[in-house]
Amino acid sequence: MIKVENLTKRYAGQPAIRDLNFEVGKGEIMGFLGPNGAGKSTTMRILSSFMPPTSGRASIAGFDVFEQSLQARAHLGYMPENVPLYNDMRVTEYLDYRAALKGVPHRRVAERVGDVKELCGLKEVEKKIIGALSKGFRQRVGLADALVHEPDLLILDEPTSGLDPNQIRQVRDLIKNLGKQHTILLSTHILPEVEMTCSRVIIINRGRIEACDTPENLLGRIRTAGGVIVEAKIGSDDGAEELRKIAGVRDVTESVDGDWRIFALRVEANTDVREEVYRLASARRWTLRELSQRKATLEDVFVEITHPDEV
Amino acid sequence: MRKFYTLLSREVRSYFYSPIAYVVLVFFLFVAGVDFYFQLSFMNGKPVGYSVQEAFFNSVFFWFAFVLIFPLITMRLFAEEFKLGTIEPLMTAPVRDWQVILAKFFGSLVFYLILWLPTLLYFWVFQSITHQPAANSTGAYFGTYLMILLLGMFYLSIGCLASALTKNQIVAAVISFCVITLHFFSGLISFILQEVSSSTRQLLGYFSAIEQMGTLSRGEIDTRPVVLYVSMTIVMLTLTYQAFQSRKWRL
Image (cartoon, rainbow over all chains, first blue to last red; front, side):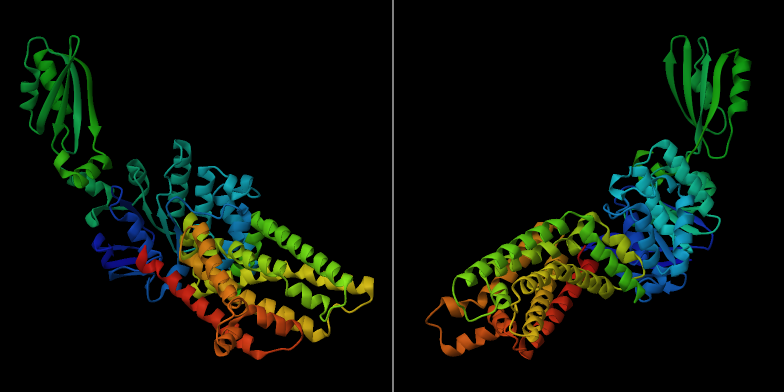
């Protein structure tokens, strides 16, 4: 659905993205991750034909975004960052206008606009002036606009920025549902969201693709897959030293809470050392208060990939 | 064509969403009304060699209001879209750049013509009360409103260009106001400067909106201003197109 080859964009000589190559297949939900200024919005703006690349090619549904821009744009629903809207129009009026502009046949406009209002939960505000809407509703108007002409592909630039946790959950569910019929490329900072919604993830940093894989594979790849927390009364034993001997434990840090010792273990990827820890504790007659595993998240992947020095 | 019509109808309606339409309408109707009143009272006092309609369109009041309305009508056209960022959803919809530019231009032209509609009423009221013709002939009406249309097109296209150059509406208004006033006053040079040669005077006369209005409002339909203003409008809109395209490499 999306094909990007050697895409490069320079602003005043400064490269914003360098030699991007990736593909998004039909029906995929692709997450686009990266720190601020990594080039996410630039890439999306090029894909939506808003600006041309300095070099390289990109195509949507087989149409080059620059040379066959109109056809490419007809297949695309794009929601820009911060959702710019005409503040002086009413919700229904705006969606009617956008539907006509995007070539929805005249007799289907009312039906399509009704459908997207239903889908995005805009029924209650349909007669309101857009300028008077809250951030959450503006976001939904933007999403309804992107959907109104039934595009094959949705490009959403930070669809959940500035929303409260409940709204984020609603938007996330909506995106998940949309993923059944549409191909979606979405960018975000909120990592749990990507883990829950996306089938594949691209991590971009300083204009380059650092990783492109499924969330599961990315988690498997990183050096620190997770950790184990142990809280125990250990008497006079050197707990940290004993724990370090367990196979798979890379590092142990220790802190004290009254009589209790708290150990944070960093372990190798894909290993579970909790059983070993329990055996050690029972052999040494330690009193265990907590033994828990912290799973690695995409956040760890993100931090490791985008700031390798700090890990 | 449907997309153009969709864009055009939004442009025209957008004037009436914001207070600007009403402010401009009230201002314009006030000045036009004052103009009409003073011209009539003046003509009431002594015999003159021109018609009410001629006097109305060739007074200081008229020109004062005239040059002022264009920056007000056009300043927001592109600048507001750039400022709000709405240019992004607009240009990522499957529409061509020239469709957007022409829709904005013709949208402002429609609003401009709406502005002039009430003035037709003045002459009708005058005629039905006094039973005197307000103009020498039907051709005089046609000529005047043709000039209004031509000059309006040209000045609106200047406004379009100014607005496409910046995201600041005030800057757009100042640029278009300066250019429009400059063009307008270049036609006055022959009246102000006594020592210019007659050939310079004649040359400036060809570009002088005031002289052209004088001719056309008497009902003499001259094709030279038609060619001049239509071609200048096309030039300005082409420049607007170029300025609008520049966002692609400027950003």
